[in-house]
Amino acid sequence: TWTYDDQGNEITHSSQGWNGSEWSESAIDTEMYNADGQRTSILSRYLSGSAWVNQYLYRYAYDANGNETIDLCQNWSGGAWVNSRRWTFTYDTNGYNVNFLWEVWSNGAWVNYGRSIITNDASGRETYSLQQAWYNGSWVNYGQDAFTYDGNGREATDLYDTWTNNAWVHSTLNSFTFDRNGNRTDELEQAWKLNSWVNSTWYIDSWIKISAIQIQVTTP
Image (cartoon, rainbow, N blue to C red; front, side):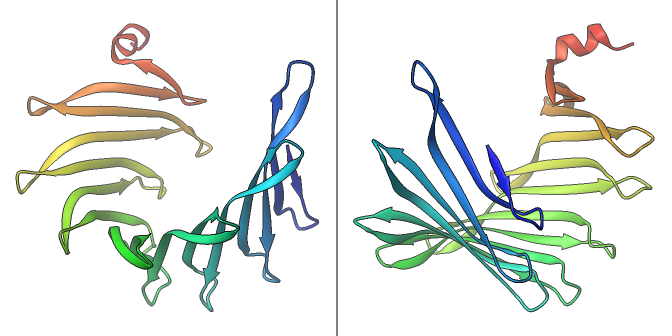
């Protein structure tokens, strides 16, 4: 169940479980916003007996341009909020996200975990993302995405490669099609096998998965 404030912002999201005779609330997320309508926190709680118990808390920070700069996740432990994970976003002078840093809280300090280095085109569309993991004190490649767009600025393909034996190797290729109204209608996922693309999964309309064999049967 969702509730909203007068500005249309989601303020609660509750889940219910069936206790054998009726539906009863089992968990609830409560969201807070600042005067600019930016979400500043999400508090997640679950029902234990008749008492609501804190589970985790997300806090959000923004720069002067309204760009989200920090996501902080804390867990409830020992009657206090304890740092768990933190995500930091960096933007260029155009306001485009160019770096995403993921850290974890370990032994009282933030430790690097992963990052993405992002390239955007002149329209602010993400064209490339390099993913790296923190390993033995340095950043190590593990994945990259290359995106293309059609003439209407809609994402056409997403090519994902993995870093294997010190070289980039194709992994998956996702291709998207749209109707005349710009609604996405199909997504074809292909896997790189034996130096060629092989159909893997086809998503149609409501993201219904159809196997590669069914694709051959149901398409002209």
